[in-house]
Image (cartoon, rainbow, N blue to C red; front, side):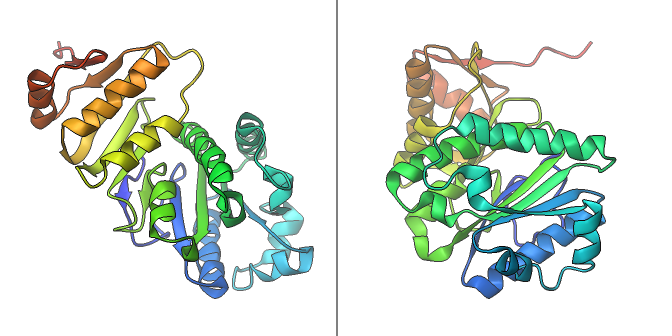
Length: 282
């Protein structure tokens, strides 16, 4: 079961969780990184740190993690430069970057680990609007992979990016610290698009923008939505879901929606949104 919504700790995350984690300064980032990777090691995962800098500075970021030299020698810990994973400047091919983590996870499983976990400070990948737009699309692809595989990631961002940018980034992760974003769009373990939190007049524009950025599998015949974790939603959110389906040319199927969503669908005409009730159990 994936963790969804606001969290305050990195210790209880599962083997396929994907978290947006802002940090105040380098010291707090390093402490969070060690906590996240250490918890993964305790779960039997191969772990990795992707960072910026020379090998010595990358190694120093892991001060406080037990048995670093032994883990590096044995393959339980990997340290890689950020530009090796994402490229030196712009993330030119999100598919290739996302596939790299799929390959790393398969390799970890083949080597006897329970999965693969990576922690990275990816602030430099989102400095400009264009780079951020591309990276958010990539984040949605990574989350789709994590939803059904033993891959977990801590995507760390400098809090100096500002609340608005952090909200954009957090909205495409299933989990983040409380108050970072009013909602989360993510992939459920069943392959649907999940929505948690609330979408109202204040967050409707952010929600619409999020839906414009995320990517589906190329062969998707419909956008299946799971709104079971929604705490509040209004017609603007359903309009955004309808607009997304129209743009993609496929229907939006909302499975077993909460009563409020069902009522809104009855009151407001939608062209591409369909309510799908679960088949009764035999």
